[in-house]
Length: 119
Image (cartoon, rainbow, N blue to C red; front, side, top):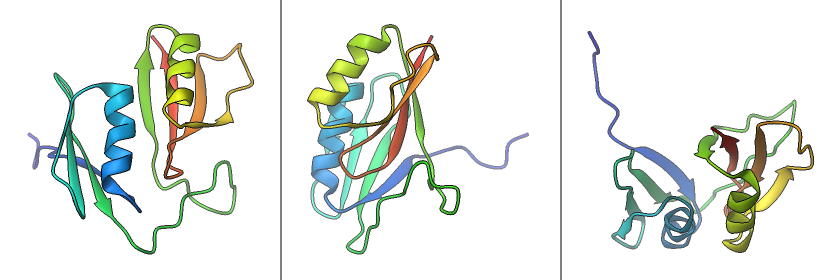
């Protein structure tokens, strides 16, 4: 029996509205709120929240001496099409050169790593 239920995953960032907009472009859904806390309600999926962190320092990836803090695995049907879309939205490739793997690694506009993963 579970002791709790996951409510929301919260990402610290310098600009919650901007980062919520990025993920809305990637995942769909609606952005709610503004200011220091912004929610992204994703249809049929887990909500994400974005919290302003004035001293935010983006994680390094890969960095054997530092933690990546966390990352999101986003499942896609077409890696090439998804890659094009996230790059247009402002993602930066971190380790997307290996086209033989079933995943590619990017950073969102605030520097959080995320992977596009083929089904």
